[in-house]
Image 1 (tube, rainbow, N blue to C red):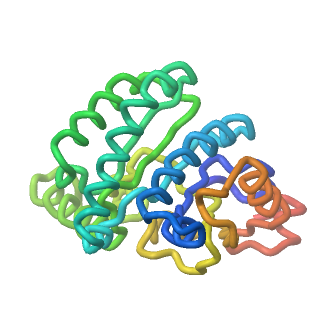
Image 2: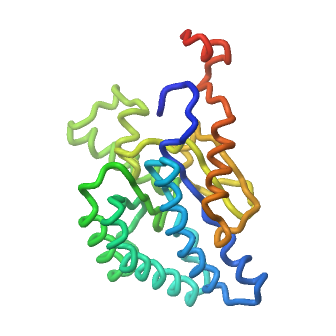
Image 3: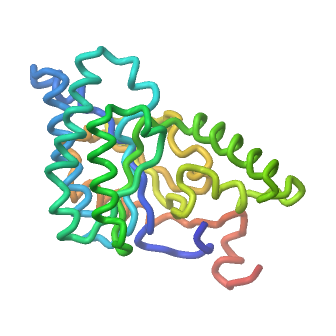
Length: 247
């Protein structure tokens, strides 16, 4: 967690990309076309984040609940993910953007896993800019997996149960090693977090925009960042303490 005080540019922005289906329906198009246009928006937003100075962008790309969608839609989403990874590899390398993933990615199709591994390996040395894809992700599953891993570490003697703390436990989350989000954005007008980074967003500012994800652009990201900059992040302190630097 970053230190209290004003911060005009968030270090880490997490986005719930919502509204692809509604975008397509409003235009009389198949839902998959909405998802395809959403993939184009990813490139736009990643580029915009770099221009603004946001070092980490985490995108909620596929949740554990999304498997319940019609089979053809799930298949189409996996195809678009594979296409995105193949298409964007050279661009990520050119722009020195490192790819990370969070979630139970071992349940994804084999071809997608191969592409993810290939892109992550090719970009693993970059440090300035980071794209995190949440795939087969659910925050409650993440906590369960982390609790199991932490318990195993205690049994193996690598951790002590009496030393349990957030700092120690958080290392076992999928996001271990990544900073917590400063700003959470959800597109499409919905105002809920949908099992996304529940622990990591404990102190995140939240912005809900009516803009559907395929229409979300640099100006919309900048507007959310501007809103973030107008807010005072107190972390339990008073305004007077922040202004004076008192503890």
